Amino acid sequence: MFKLVFLLAIMLCGSLQSNAQSPPTYEIYALKYFGIHSVPLSELALGAPKKDTMNMYFMYWLVKGNNGKNILVDAGFLNDLDIFKELNTTFYIRPDSVLLELNIKSDEISDIILTHPHWDHVDGISLFPKAHIWIQKEDYNYFVGEAWQKDGRHGGFYKRDVDTMVSFNLAGKLTLVDGDDKEILPGIKVYTGSRHTYNSQFVQVQTGGDKVILASDNIWIYYNLEQLKSSPYPNGTFDTTAYVKSMQRMKTLASNMKYIIPGHDPAIFSRFPMVKPDIVRIK
Ligand SMILES: [Zn+2]
Image (cartoon, rainbow, N blue to C red; front, side, top):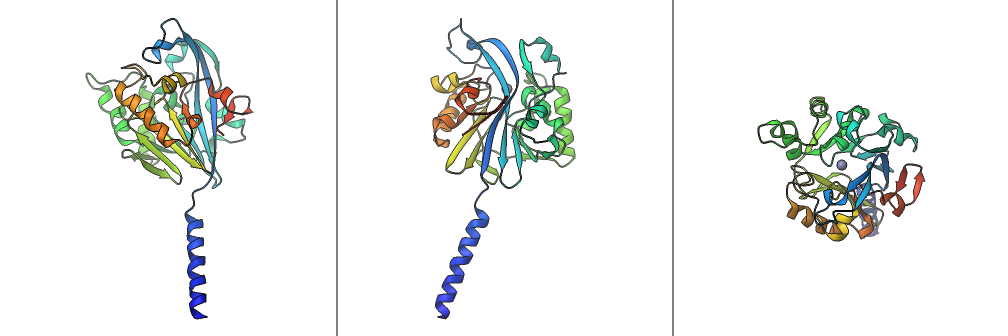
C-alpha cells in the first residue's frame, strides 16, 4: 500500500512539474503600418529581372502569449525621420495605432525582440515605454560603436535610434543576446547567421504543434526564399552566401514552408487570414 501511494505521489509530482514547464501558447499576428510602391525587384533579390518592380509593406509582428505577455518582433518607425520624405509612400499609420486595432495599448507591450537595428525596425521602440528589449550583442555593439568609425557601415542606422537604444540599456531594460540558437523567452528562440546586419537574428515561435519563423529582413520577400536568392550586398546583407544558407536552415526550423515569414512582402496579407484592416493572423 505504502509503495502504491509513493508511486502515485511520484506520478502526480511528475505531471505537475511537466505542467509548470510546458511553454505558453502564442497567437502570432503581422501588422502593417507603412507601404511604398515601385521598388525594383533587382534591388531586393540577386538575379531578379531588371524590369520588374513591386510594392513593399513595412510591418512588425505581435506574439501574444496566454501568459499575459505581449511580445513584439521589431517596432516600426516614426514618420518624422528624414528618410520618410524620400520614399514613395502609399500609406503610413503609427505602429502603436495599428496595435489599437487589437485593443492593445502601447504600455501593455512587455518585450520587443529586435531582429536588427535598421531605422524601420528599431525607431519605434520609443513608443513602448514599458518594453524590455532583446537584441544580439554583436549587432548592438556594432550599431553603437564601430558603425560610426571610419569605414564603418551605418547605412540604415540613425543617431537618434542609437541614443534611444543606449537609454534603454542604461535603464536596465535591454538584454544582449549572445549568439545563435538561444531560447530567450519560454517557447521563443532566436537564431543568427544571415548577416542582414552585422549579426542580425530571426525568431522561432513554438506554439501548439507549429513552429513559426519570423524571418524579418533575414528574408526580405518571398522571392528571396522561393528562388533561394540572396538580397544584394551590401544593402541587403554583409554576406550573400550566409544569407542563402540561413534561408535553407529556416526550412528545417519551421514546421511548414508557409510558416516562414519574410520582412517586407505584401503577399503575407493575402496568404493569411485578415483579422483587422491592417492585421493578419499567422495561422
Ligand atoms: Zn526592414
